[in-house]
Length: 88
Image (cartoon, rainbow, N blue to C red; front, side, top):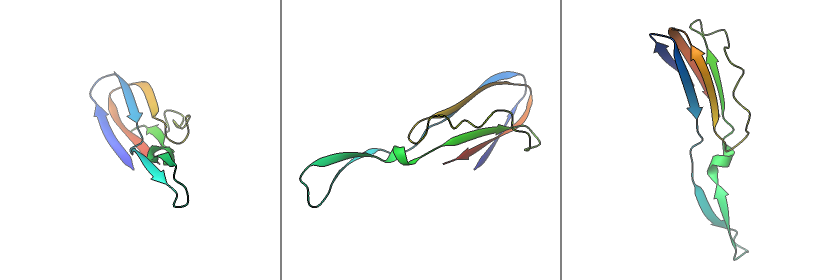
């Protein structure tokens, strides 16, 4: 998915991508012990920031932490229109 945003002046911009989900208790039919299952761990998120042409990648893809963790980009941006690509 792509998200567009516009700044009217130079700003410090913080983009934060957080996996959604919750922790469930599950139990296998043949066992009596319950296990915690974290559905957020299935989400391996990535975040990319592009300039107004939608072509130039301004920041290396934020994909540093692997499944189940937040990804973020912190950047000072001049006035203009930008696109953030979200995947995962």
